[in-house]
Image (cartoon, rainbow, N blue to C red):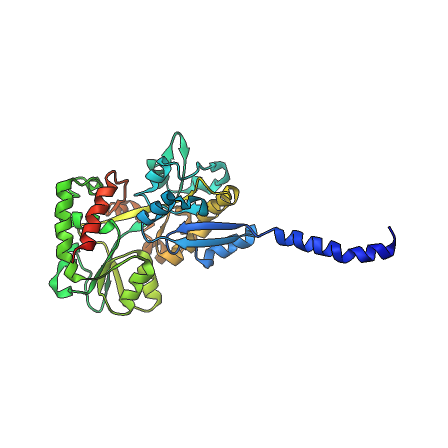
Amino acid sequence: MTRQRIVRLLPLLAAVLLVGSCAKKTPTLNLLVWEGYADPSFVKAFEEQNHCKVSASYMGSSDELVAKLRGGSAGNYDVISPSSDVATFITEAGLAAPLDLSKIPSYNQLSAQLSSLPLVRANGQVYGVPFMWGPDPIIYDTTVFTKPPDSWNVMWDPKYKGKISVWDDLSTVYMAAQVLGYDKPDPSQLYNLSDEQLEAVKKKLLELKPNIRKMWATGGELTNLFVSHEIVIAMGWPLNTADLKKANFPVGETIPKENTTGWIDHLMITAGSENKELAHKFLEYMVEAKTQKLVTDKTNYAPANPQAGQFMTADEVKIRHLDDVDNYQKRIYFWQNVPRRAKYNETWNDVKAAQ
């Protein structure tokens, strides 16, 4: 081939190379997770290490997650973060892929109290890794409450008419059941209420409606309700407390005498994911002790990897309750699978629809 011909072909070769490089798209890992679980403060490093992009969508409730997965959207997401109330269902319904734990070496560092639970185990395989855990506490404006409210009953106080918020979630059903004493002597009864008990819960929640300014659907929405002084008290997340403190809002957080419900969030890979190799790398990265510390900085939640404590100050360890995990967890009735979830949702929808 003559030099002249080679020179003529150079632009063509350059074009071919350019098309080839454009065809190699940056791999994207799609998440459907709770707010705070894809913050750039920790996700950016994973993207850089793996030359990929992480794209997150956020869910407002466990039922929203299940609805999307069952509605044919499972293939749109690679990684999900179900809480302990639906993790078992997702496992048993075949919506998640079994994990190759050899690709997640940090799994062995996770709290045995969490990883030993049967929530995400089936047929001798593990379908999820514990990620974060925490309570659904009372969050309040400290200029209104100079002392922490000591009972959920404060939500029904007529003096707070139109000034409270509850989560648009079954957690509010559990909370009313606690006020009615249905968690005694066995807290797991909260997730197995009879028709008669659910009817009493509905009546109790209907009595609460005059006090409700708005039912919040996302953490950001609840934070805004406080900042705009529309509400003074709510059931919320530790994430709200953290965000309100950053906004210099006078916020307090407490677990009342009745105790509260709470959650263990897991990371799972969807059965329909086409990026399972990258997804395994993401799960390993997210449960590493250093990353867990960064996630707690954002969310104020407790990490599933206790070794995250070595990267915290003594105050941070205390705030995350890592210095007294056993006693703190006794105050939290972790969400469980709800066999009659449809009936619970029917009860909750009746409450919401009532004028």
